[in-house]
Amino acid sequence: MPAPRIAPTRPSRPWLAFLVGGAFGFAILLVTQVLSDSRIAVGPWALNGNGALAMPFLGFPVAIYSGWTVLADRHVGRDLTLRIIAFSLGLILGAGPLGLFFALPMVLVTAAVYVTWMRGSSVKRRDLLLWVAFAVSVLIGALPILGLFGVSLLPGSLILLARGKPATTRIALGTLLVVATIGIVFVVPVLFPAPAPAA
Image (cartoon, rainbow, N blue to C red; front, side, top):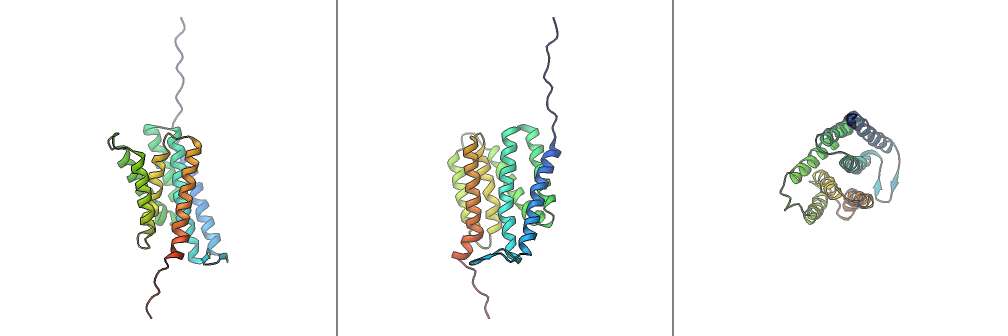
């Protein structure tokens, strides 16, 4: 009787996740630089100069959501953890200075939200709480002083909401993230402009 065949396990390749994250980060850095040197302006919004910093505010949350959601859909356990870390490191390093100032805080906050939720009691893991957390993060992001912290909170709750959901739901949640981030970055400053400095 022939011995039973054991299917070989796929070796973990976190370097692939690192390269993908690096590509995302470099793309964000490149687009930010191009916008900074451009003369693009539409109404009250200017994307040149400091206005180009809208790109990392928008790009990094979307990159984190996309990368972490795809990885969580395909991997579990230690393999998932390694790939998420690799992707996040690639994202940070690929974006250069923008990665340190923008991506790193967002990754740390997202990781804290993710770990805290996953270690909580299964009884308390209700989607309603995640929706409340997302709404609170949008409100915090609308505050001028805490804008970066609020934007950093956005991906975490949506990544958790996307776990185990069909592709259409994950895409819808990603679209919601884009809309919320655009609202925080572009709409809120127009509706509630910062007070002019005293003469």
